[in-house]
Length: 131
Image (cartoon, rainbow, N blue to C red; front, side):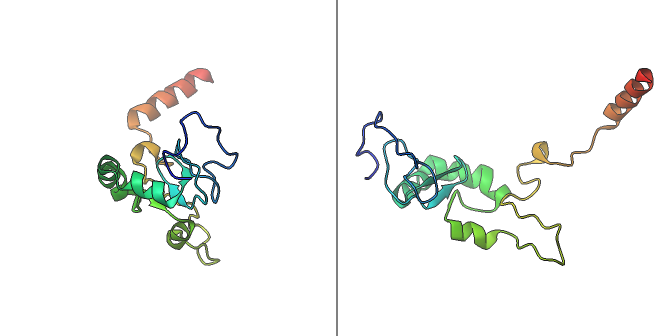
């Protein structure tokens, strides 16, 4: 069933937005949903992935704000994601197996953000006072 064939209040299939299930778009329940949207974290059918991804506003926003940091398109199939996923080897067990590189979401989301020197002073003072 293509986008727009269903009313907005149509009941959703239980597999809506899941890999291989029904498309996640509101008025679409086409199967199989084989395209992962990195923005909404859901699966879409090929037609909806093309329509959403090629929308001029969505495409420009992704290309300007996200693709330079993340290094991949907005929609990908499982095969495309697996092809760019780092392979963990016995020689390099520290390699990440996640799709998002550390720090890719900016310094705000970096797991190892250093503390400022003023914060460290305040923490030392609070520790001394507490003991």
